[in-house]
Amino acid sequence: MSGARSPRVQALLTAAVAVIAEEGLRGLTHRAVDGRAKVPAGSTSYYFRTRQTLLAAVVAFIAEQEVADIEAATVSEELAEAPPVRQVADRFAGVLAHWLGPQRDRTRARLEIILLTARHPEGELGAELLRARERFAGQARLLATALGSPDPAEGGRIVVAFAEGLTYDGVTRPGPDATDRAVLRQTLERVLLSLAR
Image (tube, rainbow, N blue to C red; front, side, top):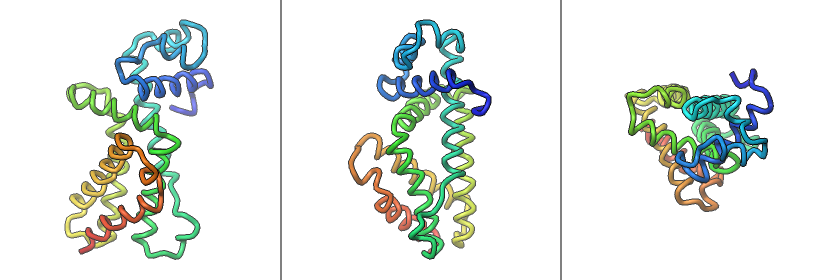
């Protein structure tokens, strides 16, 4: 997967994500990626013969990175002794702050692709992104169970839907609060505490 990619392919996929984030899916062409990556014309088409192949590779690339972000998320050092709910809220908030800050382009591109797959649910394009979302949902269900939610599946769904709502809001209405980990943590903590009631 990502470990098997050459630096050139990695750079092309990073450039493709930036193109989608800036121009939408209609802007995704081999030529646009070549230009964004500052590589000779024809480089992208050498590795990805068709636009569909390129788009599928971008989807896999985004999904791998987001799963890695979720799995690598940690609690802020200053909250190591905080109550468990606050620690979990902080961990999720760290992921969202990363997605809305340094990885904003990737998040915009993911939302563009999700809208495309929603219009064509019969396709396989979004399968990788759905698997990444399911990984997040699985963690949310475990959390809801630990909090004593009477319906962990529903509780987990609520957590994921709320996190996705914060992501969408942060992308469409950018502002300092969108990437402020403390603000995101407080918001998520309120939702998590409501599951335990």
